[in-house]
Image: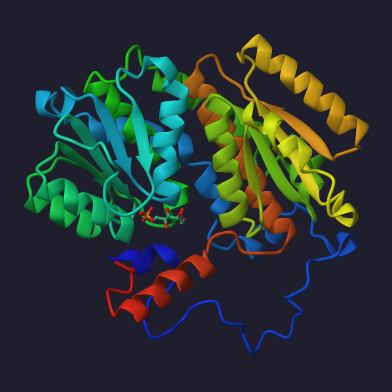
Amino acid sequence: MDARDFFGYKNPDEEPGGPDPDDGSDSDRTPLFDEAVTLDDPATLRRIDPEDMLGKVAEMPRQLVQARRVAAPLEPDPKLSDVDAVIVLAMGGSAIGAELVAAAAGERLRVPLVVHRDYGLPAGAGERTLIVAASHSGETAETLSGFAVARQRGLPTVAITTGGRLAASATEGGVPVLRYQLGGQPRAAIGYGVGLVHELLSRLGLLREPDPIASAVSVTEDLLERLGPSVETDANPAKQLAWAIFGRTPIVYGHGPMSAVAHRWKTQFNENAKAWAAWEPMPEANHNAIEGSLNPRELGDAPYIVQVRDPDEPREIAERYRVVEELLGERATSRSTVWAEGATPLARVVSGVAYGDLVSVYLAILYQTDPTPVTLLAMLKERLARATGSDPTGA
Ligand code: F6R
């Protein structure tokens, strides 16, 4: 198995994503509102989502449970736990898990955690830094490059992956590997992405009073049932939200733990719905984004604001949202608020992710776009590989 198994193309000579000459449809055009499909017909869902991304979203709770089992054999090791910082090397769907865990943990993290989304290592990485290299495929160029530097420098390192060159190189170098089994798209492995980082930090004692996984699992299972594909649009706020966003560009606001959730919503709108999307952390958005709603005037109705809020948010943040709501209302900006559910920060983060994942797949279906393949992402990796004469994964 290599990265091509995950990104939807097999033959390195064949660039994916070109128009199908036999496809007579006018696929460059967004379906008009009255051409839109229903989200309530199982046959339509199967036709547009043939690789069942909706089913993959529903696997998140099971992955969280499974992640505990994968991490269980990891023995406490002072070489890994006696550190002053954690740096997670990862990209895209493999990076957001650590960001979500850090956001949910807040001040319970004993040391700062930085997610490094680039080649090499960031400044400041040293002997007392735990390096966690996380790549679903184990083939991501940026992650492999930082991992190689960490190994050369002998830094305390752990790998999280399904295999690939990351697993091979870690095993060869005696680096502990949290290895899980899951084919398909990296972003659909989010239950592992969150669960494995959460368990790793907990087992190493770097996360104080970790939230129980079980409550995150049960609240997410419940939410997935209430908002899942078998619940008709009339009774399903996630389907209704996808309809509201249809034809507009979503901009997702979040504060504290919810800012990482908003980031995930943004990336899922990109990768599943193949749509532009933005994400704005609060309260920073009050110092810039709020002013950006005027021009171009013709596009005043183009954005759709989603405010993902935490019932436990601080009072001053609630007050800011109240004023933002007033201003957006005065300008008639299209918007919704989604409240995260659950008794713990981890439960609210995980269920908030599940909510956004569903909305993004419903939006893909409304656009009549298969949510699973990430064609441009694959093309980019392929073209980079051709340009550099390296492996088709871009490494
Ligand atoms: C694709 C996806 C991407 C990948 C990224 C890194 O579904 O989510 O964002 O996660 O290209 O690849 P991996 O995760 O294999 O290191």
